[in-house]
Length: 209
Image 1: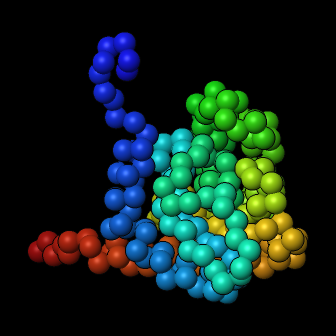
Image 2: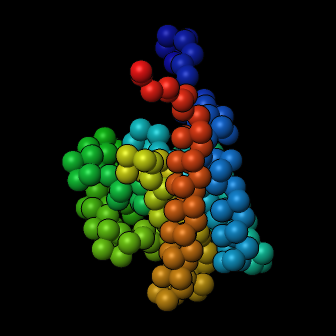
């Protein structure tokens, strides 16, 4: 603060903390899935996690296709609903929480994300739930499209999201569905692995006699 000459912790520290914490949870378990997705699709695969009313990209895995999109990188932080993975996270929340997120982010959306007003995000949430996957039709960066699905914890709440981004010409409606199917398969695999790890980490309890 230039007036008080005091220093405050900025959002960058928040992002670094998120990246560090995910190293021991969903991130390492997701690496194999991200590798498979990038190789099978040829495009770039992402893992994002929710933090408050934002989503943070914690991993970017590039595929072999020579034309790549640059809308999202590891460490990038966006309001929930901005981008395919982030939209998948928002859409997996109950309606009341969706409205709370949109209200909390109203100012930043108006200031920095003119293509993502709450009215548009509500429509995208509805479309996501109907289609079974999130679609970002180039709203964040023109010609950069994405498809995303949530990763859910044992309680059903979203704890992460997988997404694929590609240039618009590579994401026809038929290919969107194909990629969504691959994403769902990997999300299910990650959920199962997380469940197994969680079960293994629980201390065993002897039956009372």
